[in-house]
Amino acid sequence: MWPNASERNDVRVSDQNTQGLPLEIPLQGEGRKTGGRRFRKAYLLVLLVPLLLFAGAVIGMYFQPPGLQKFYALTGLQPGGGSSSPIALPPEMELPRDMVETMRKTDVLGLARLMPLGDVSIVAAPYGAGDARVAEIFVSEGDKVEKGTPVARLDNYEVLQSAVLLAEANVAIHEATLMQTRAAVLNSRNEAQAALDQALSAASEARLELDRARELHARGVTTRATLDTLTAAEQQAQLAVTKAQATLARFASVDVDQQPDVQVASRNLDAMKAELIRAQRDLDRADVLAPVSGTILEIHATPGQRPPSEGIMEMGNTDQMMAEVEIYQDRIIQVKPGQPVELVATALGQTFQGRVSFVGLTVGRQGLVSDDVAANTDARVIRVMVRLDEASSSLAARFTNLEVIARIDTDAASQP
Image (cartoon, rainbow, N blue to C red; front, side, top):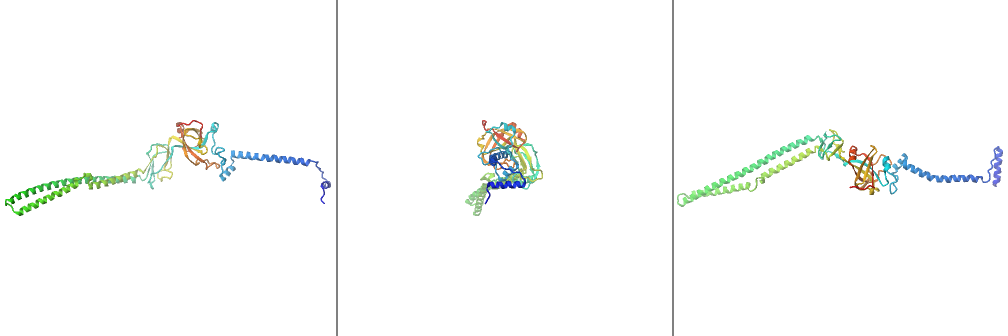
């Protein structure tokens, strides 16, 4: 049989006494109080766990330690991406203190880049340049040029120039041929007219001779053979007149320039002129012309180098600077043309001013992102163009493609 509780206590007391240890006998109800204190501590710990989790989430979202950033980068998740609207500004936007102090809840923010009016123009080699290399560069970075001004020349210029000289010589030869043909036609017409006049004179003389022979034959003075001979001569004279008239009609029926020989010579001349125009246009392609009026921003090629795929140089109209702003699609409804915009370049410590000039019509993928691994690279944005004022344009002219932060004041009255 198992011993009861009192017997088990006696056994413990007996064992302790045999070992010479002090005996501890708990008072009645003391064990219950100790268990209650433990229960209250566990209950307090349960209450603290959600609070600690919430605090950790807030601190993690605010500071975004490297471990959390790597987690978002690996999983492709975005802080606040599951909500209907962003819970915070994009992590790449480190706003200046001045902007934060003056920012209102209704302001719309977006990453932007500075650009010339019409964006940067690529100056590429002309179509059909083939294997030509760059022979000369006529401009330097920072030079202002007008549209159509030669900014570079390719090394096929001399070859194409010789083709132009050959075409010019062929044109001169065919011009002389046309003049010669026209002169020949005029001479032939004059000869035909003279032959007709001569035939008419001979026919008139033959007719008179025949008339006299008939009178003499009637009086019996001349013979019948003589009359027949003169009759045949008069008929031959008439046939000569008919032939001369036909020859003259071939040259006199139309104008000299409409004569077949002249037409052939004229068409040959036109073909040579067309060949000259083609050679001149080929020569024009040896010169690289400025596509727009503006400033040379960057030169990518040197003499002797094949024109690179990204173009020989870049240029743009920096007299009027613009800003291309990417606005999240859920905020674009607040943006209207004419609203004032503040552009902050944290790298320069400068602020530019402008107004919204155009709001895009399509939604695209975000193109302006920072190097932050936790940055959103798949956001849907709409392009908004901002026109800088005159003072800001002059300051921003040297910083094409500079990344800035744009703040659009949606509460201000829009201006056209």
